[in-house]
Amino acid sequence: MCGMVALLMALGLLPTLPVPGQSETLVDCARASVVLRTGASSIEAKAAQMLRDEVNKRGGRWRIATKAPAAGNVVYLGVGAGVRSATRSLKPLAEGYRLSIQQKSGRTVVTATGNDARGCMFAAGHIIRLLRWGDGRLRLPALWVETAPAKPMRGHQLGWRPTANSYDRWGLKEYEQYIRDLIVWGTNAIELIPFDSAYDREKNLRFTCALADLIASYGLEVWLWYPADDTVPEGVRGDGLVPGQLACPSQSDGRRFLLDRRRELFSRIRHLDGVLIPGGDPSGCQCEKCTPWVKTFLALAEEIAGIVHRYHPKAGVWISNQGFRDTDNDTFYAYLRTRQPDWLAGLVHAPWAEETVASMRGRTPSRYPIRQYPDICHCVRCQYPVPDWDQAFAATLGREPVIYRPSDHAHIARLFQPLTVGAVTYSDGVTDDLNKVIWSAILWDPGRSDKAVVEEYTRCFFGERAAQDAVRGIYLLEANWRRPVLGSPTIPKAFALWQRLEKAYPE
Ligand SMILES: [Zn+2]
Image (cartoon, rainbow, N blue to C red; front, side, top):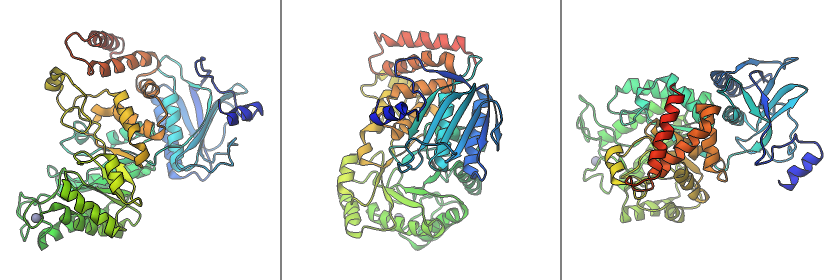
């Protein structure tokens, strides 16, 4: 126990903390009033709604109130919701919160105080992941926590496109539930893919704008992944515009077409915090005029940034060097060093970058932060393949199966943190669900063990009774991929355990 906490406890300023290894004190919370302060912001109100709904889905009967009830359990939620902080002299850290859960005069009193509106959202999320539910009761552990994220960027890409294995079948309702499920773990940014050539453009535009409104209503950052690879539709012709081919930014009509399309989106989308323009995967037109692409790309990105900033002055424009070879990277970094462009917010280390994060950090002027764009959804032919994966798995499960690699991804999420401001991951569906949770949680607190996160994950989504078995089951699945299939000691165990769980919890 740290000296400060011990001192405060001795002075009676803190309730008793559970001692690690000893059984925790659980307090009843089946019914409770969530009290919002007068003048609460829309984001604080949204945090209260999320909390009430998610607790009630797990068997609670919570309601929202504007005044503290005379009797019964109570949850105070808000920015500076009136709690006396033992450490109030410390500068409140962005997105952080204090959470206290205790029994007082026969009532459960929860005080969730955000350092800012987003902090309230994460405090509500913390309560959700602490809930003990599913055994006919609803309880919370007595505790006192003060926390703030280690890394400012903790996001995931949820692109509405046919390439994804889930998102393209979703409407706003499904997106909202999934965003809530990510907020619980501290996710603060969602990256969208604004267009896909498989969809009607206007329909795509409307849905992207509606998703941005939804994300912003939860106080999260709205990001776009928007490469310069627009395919020219039928009926559009001009210099650099051939239907079915990529628009060419090196010819006047092609360039105008690309910029007009972006102007249309940026003028209509009401919330925008960041735009990633990838240098490759995909890049754009590969004609002779556009070669070398790195030069065309940098000039085009600058022009696109001008349009972004006209409509969203505070939005950051970020670029990646995916697929750039030696001389391309020499050009790329020389441009950054000599021009030090103001339009650029930072660099993105992404799959197919021909260098490590450390190399990128070393070559990039220090004024530009580095964000990761890690591939968390693939197992082979990708950025972080499963090492020595048995060919039987590779051939049958393929590149994008349901992935359980909690300790692998916790390691990767920790590894590059000293060099980056965090990550917005590349995901193509719900199959990497647990990896998203691990990345968000480890970017919040790199000192957390992946096991503790997995325990919260199973409790949050499967309930108290199945939680410990599910933890074992998940680690057995990770272990299965680390040895040859033939003679594996874990595969029969994992199979038997998950069959037993399937029988016990058919829902
Ligand atoms: Zn071209």
